[in-house]
Image 1 (cartoon, one colour):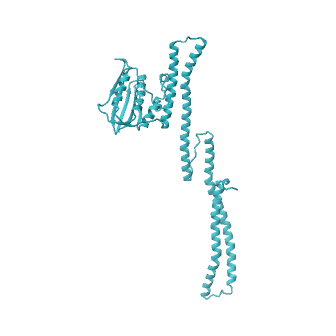
Image 2 (image 1 turned 90 degrees about the horizontal axis):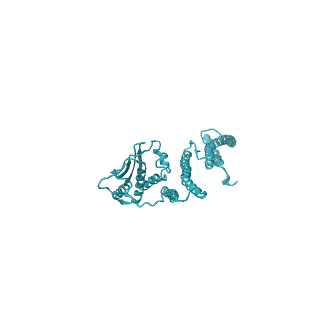
Image 3 (image 1 turned 90 degrees about the vertical axis):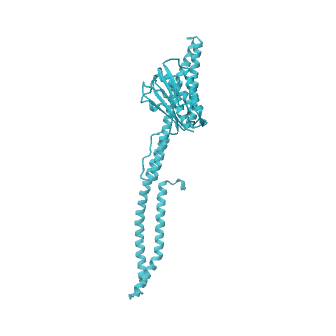
Length: 365
């Protein structure tokens, strides 16, 4: 039988048996050669002491060899039986968890991603099981996120496609007349689809680490002033919402990609304007512990505690008003990844009806 077709149990048993045979063979060979000689030496010492055994020496040696052979045969039989049984038990103890691992990994390969390997008494197998379980948990999470992504993407695509199809069917049936308003609505829905596809592509690149990040020392104050001025133009003068910049005159430079920082701030300010109907929106900046913090603080609708853990997940929206918003639901996920790629981290604090604070830090240059 080829060696590669021999199972682990047979290999372990044969290896134990081979070790036992080598040990027994060595014992027999050495004993067979040395025992009679040692016995003759003992007889000579007896003769020196005055006891006459010269005439019976040959018979004594033969009797000793016969007794030795019988006792050795009995010892070999008993020892081989005991060693074989012990080898079988040890082999079974090692192979049993491996067979269990094989069964579980086969189920895992068949799609049962919730299967996990149990702990083993053998330290090496226990480490193997722990590594497999970590891999299984990671793959299960990836599969869960994949299913959620497909479900969310289907939902996000369905709404604009339904609107576009409805208008086209009505125009084809003569139910509505083509007009600039209808065409504008179709353009808005196709633009929404385009934004969704672009955001998904950018998020995919960011999560895979393929998004180019050009880190260099930059002063963010000019960017902050420009953004506040730009978004202030969207607000009515003396209107219900005021946009303010709370920033020291001099800011330390940070190591960042200024275009990506602008992308994040545009998203945060856009969300703040969208969900703040009265009060204020403040862009606050401060430095601490070799970090520059930037926060967008609003007095808008806020976010409930049950929704806070999901804020930076793709396609997340907390309520119906957010579900019907113009956004794609991916902006915060992209922002989070962009900040991480620049060595920072983004956080959120919010209470329902009391506004939200989105803040992130960037390392000082």
